[in-house]
Length: 444
Image (tube, rainbow, N blue to C red; front, top):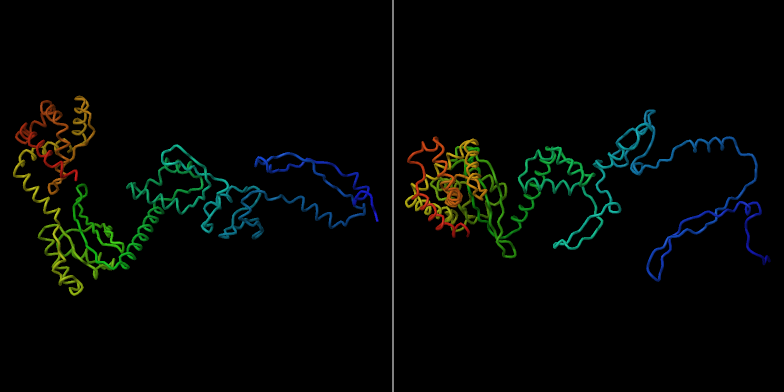
């Protein structure tokens, strides 16, 4: 038996042994640190016999050397092959054919990976970090996160709805550049695409609420409100439902916000309500229907009773129609204000209407505010005569600019032509007293 040093290599191979540096990582158990150093490792080159090689094998080796190694990360998602004599890159996910010649490069392949519809998730957690900042902004930490294109588009659509931005915001060049600077992987959708996303969100929310109403055992109370937009002269109706959930918590949800074509008579309004009830399957679970206190609504309820099954209503429809207490209170306040402060309020209303008619007059009013150094930035606005809270807001703002109205009365001949319609000193005193009386109710 051989007892000398173990040396399994032949003599010729030993001559070819040469030390080459190779990096290594060492974990220090004492201080829990990872140390990196360079330790020599032996590269062994064993010579073989100098017998002549086959000619075909040498040609095959030369062809392998001529082939370029595919080093781009794009080839992790593509296969390179010839199609009709042309080299193509075929996507592994959607099987789309893209150019794969050397002159084409790989940038278009990387761009396709970002927008490929078949790639549902992209794991970028090892490359991207997210800063988590505490509520008091004293501490911050870095964590990995996973970019999800669908989530980003959902939040973009929700932002547009929440802040009432126009759909065209997604086509603004500045917005696109800003979004790209935050997340280069986010491709900002077009106006039509984001519109479709918002409708998709609406349908999902509607379907969820329908399931809640169907599974809930309590009845629903419906409240409607109808108004005409001041800038469009179109009529709109909002329908709200109130119900008690399984935990005995009062819930309220908007079921419908819709445009109602004219004429706004009992027949049209009744048809609009019935369509909403049938769409939400609430006609069998109605508890009450609260409407404004006007004669047309009384007729509308009678029209709806002919279309509803009275046996499903409480006390044979005796409790269906409820008159809005807020609207009744508003009518009482409006009547009292007209009797007590009618002429004074009307004069102030006429002056505000004069200065807000055109941008030219409004600019002159703002210029007078600056000349008098009044530290207020509230905008003049007319009230809605049927809503006393809007009258309070109109008068409270006008009282701040009382000196402006007096100054313009002396300087503007066109304004002086209002004559007896100009607000008097007594009218301003009544307006101030009126605001003091209404302020406690408005704050509530």
